[in-house]
Image 1 (cartoon, rainbow over the protein chains, first blue to last red):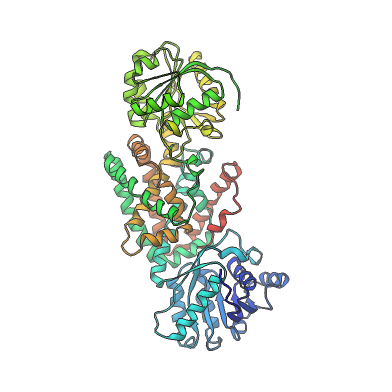
Image 2: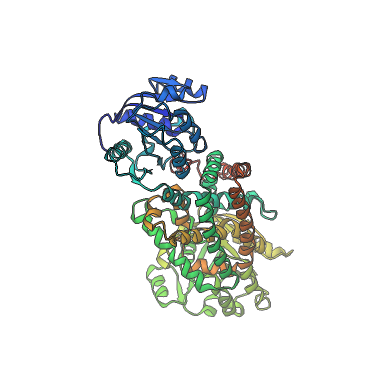
Length: 314
Length: 314
């Protein structure tokens, strides 16, 4: 964790849920902002933000909230970002930085580009902190949420030095929270997330639904014997339905592309099982261990001495 | 854990790997057997079993190993059980109990029935302890492996009181190790395991393979950002390739049946995404939370206060 001092004298956060509230707390704790303004469409959120003393200024008026800000962070649900951008584009001050925390990035990039003229003097740098909990609302945030997590920024292609400096400053902002920062093209971000996150969630949601629909296996049996593999899927399939609906709508193309590849591969496995092609199965099962080793080696997860007791023999 | 005293004066375990070795250790620790004989096809396994002092008698000769046994436990890989049954069927003593620990049960039941005549005076009770680690070999076993795990027995349909008593005794044997015992029809066992274990493994193996094959997303990116869902799949896909190959060959019908249902459901999700049918997605994602709640409520897993930090926001 670095200590860069005050990076943005005035920060405005639009939407004070888990992520917005965590950014405010982390920014204060690490001293990277001066004053904080919160704009939130929910009256009860605004009241709670005031009670918690999270912001110097709390408002429902986006235009007013952004006008003096050095940094504006849009932290509303993915599908509402376009409306927020439309509401703020004409009101930001020159030289300010505008970012967001949406889980998909091509649709957000598009929303920003739709107001390119109004935002021509603003540094627009979309972002995505890969962190979260199952909680929501102003109370749910905490300063440590981004520690040892990745934040992906998807800046525009640009040779402008001032823009590069703005990207470096926003990176420093995230690093101050203990996050690691990666720069990526927005389309590539959506493809990577489709693989590592969206497709796994879709599959988990689907298999848990398939299991619940069985006529000849009871839900209580599924629950009882879930330790043998199924349990990991139920955990993922308990994620927030609204957030995930938005993600699949917003990242349709990349998800369908990945789903197509997965389905093809699954058909090949199905065929190998049907024909008793033991060699193909064995070769495939051997190959997939390498990625797991990479994850353990990269310290993304410990080798988990206990994990094996759930698995390996079913 | 109950303390039933010596249930089987002489136990023979065929195949002393993780499960066989754990059964021996647990049976000694809980005092439910007297003498132990091990039959193992591997010379190095036999030498190691002797060094460890796991058994009073160690041999490579199955017929000799089983002839005085009160309980015979076949603990070899699933696809070799038929050969083991053929080798021992004519040599067991009247009134003894014969069981196994294979992960699939219909194929094992068939192997036993193929020798029904020779085994007519033996109590044949197939079994499956749902427990394991990633280790193998005589050194890997430990007495606690079965604690708080399920063991499923798939006895024959029978009105015979002596058979019922033998099933009760074998159940007591497993309960002495801290396991919970469930009786089930063998076909039903294979269907339940196909849902809670085999299909999840097949899907995890497949998606990890699909991710590794991408041209435009690197393995290092997949590893870096795996915390957002993918990591759980890599853990499952690191399971033993040989064991899993055997399971898919042995439980082909049930796995293909479940796979067919899953694929249909996945196509429906795919269609909802393609057409932007947000309501269908939301309704499905809401429904699947119920099963997770059931698992947490059943104490199969804690509510995990920390888990959410990996999820909920991607």
